Length: 191
Image 1 (cartoon, one colour):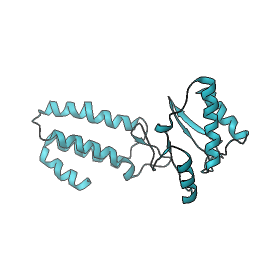
Image 2 (cartoon, rainbow, N blue to C red):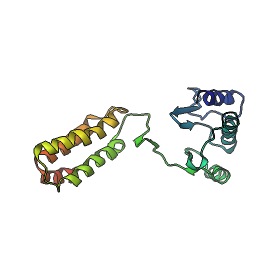
Image 3 (tube, rainbow, N blue to C red):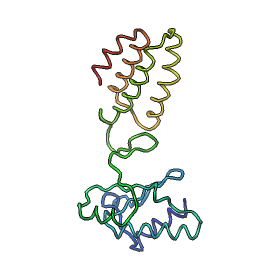
Image 4 (spheres, helix red, strand yellow):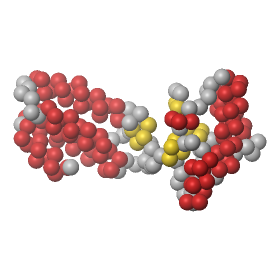
């Protein structure tokens, strides 16, 4: 990946493709994590072709190639004509924003309610499936600690969750722990 990173950075200076307009000030061409790669280019056919030539060169050199059928293109601020041109020339699926990676939304600003709503909904749906079971207090507490808090911790490893989000989750957990019917009232208010 280090070699590919170097080739992508070098390709911009060799004018094989242009920076994405919002990435130029940062001199950002790509982000990579493990075997996933996000490449940022200007939203035209030619820069995409330029980036793909780098992948072709890398494939010849390393024997590794990108999986086009697993690749997605995200086009924001691109004209409809150019979108059609890109979609007709490349076999990429078109992705919709907001981008999610490993189940988490990628964002650059403070988290809003709609951003953490999938977490709250996931917690609520888990609890709703448990309310029909006859669990002891200890059993309910163990489910909260082992299952729900691991989901919350996964999100907290990446984001600083707003206090409002944590309060909603705490309401669900305490309602589940102390009385199942109260949960439906709390869930109806939030959902």
